[in-house]
Amino acid sequence: MSDVLLVVTDAYDVRGGVELAPKIVAPQDQKGPIDVTLVRPDGTTTRAKADLVLAHVSGPRPPFALVRLAGLRATDVPAGTTVHRETKSAP
Image (cartoon, rainbow, N blue to C red; front, side, top):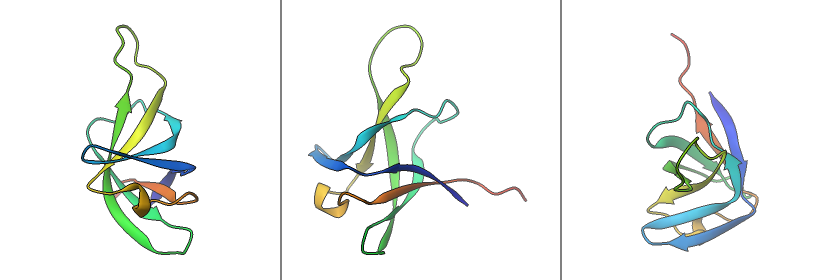
C-alpha cells in the first residue's frame, strides 16, 4: 500500500542527491528515511529512500519539510512525478 507524498513541481540537485518541490506538511509520525516509489509521467517507476529536511529552529517542529532523495539527480525526477510513501500493511 502507499500514500501520495507529493507530486513534483520542480527538482534541485544538491550535494549527494536531489531536493523536491513543493514543500510538504511533515508527517508527525515519521522518523528516519521513508521508503518511496517514484512514478514518472511516462509511467516508469523507481524505488528510493527519502529524507525529510526540516528547518533548524528551537521550539515545536516546523510544519513544512523538503523531500530529499539520496543518489538521484534532478533529471531523474521530472515535474509531474508522483512520490508515493510506502506504508506497512496490517498482517
